[in-house]
Length: 305
Image (cartoon, one colour):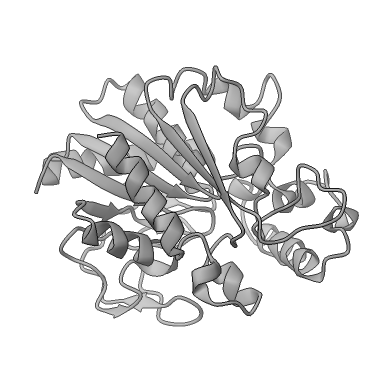
């Protein structure tokens, strides 16, 4: 295998297996519901693709043989310290992801990385890059591409912490359902990602974004947002992809000191195939499964080589 690899990083509350360019799950979705289409497309374009392990709890990834997006027959089970807890603290997730990236270097000879991150995976990736730089890792990050990443927080997160209300759903039944179900899920979990995917935590002069100044200075970043759902009087919550607004996904109002080299794109798509499924839509309406988006991801990686 070559020394340059693409690593797909999934987001909040995700369960995703570790796969390599040659080994994937033998049951269901080869790399889970976030990563499978991205992995397959980029492999077909000639990239060496790994998917990073994520579990929505402490511990290693386990087979998901029930419910939406099942997978099983995992080729590998990595230990907890190499697995992102996708419902936990952003910075702790970044530490685990950085260890995993180091594992790819030690085990597979990877020296250069292109990170492709969905949803909160973009925040986890930024935290991991910070760790790699702080520890003077020999790994280099050549590019970061984020799909539906809540750079400025989200309506669902703001709703959990009380900074948004059902009025912000603009009377849209689908949005009301999403925020209500998200809060129920957040109530089941320890304090972590659900409370951090907020404008309160990420934004402002003392927020997490500003603490990341300089981390991305030498890395080209491609940001992809979704705008499937619209409302009258659009604001920082609208339009959105079902979870993250276009305004947030495109890092609007994130300073150039934090994000120096950015290219932005928006599509009338949903956040994920899970979101499309909730809305009764084909999977191709999701940014993680849409051919035009996948081609753009490939283009961003190739341009950064």
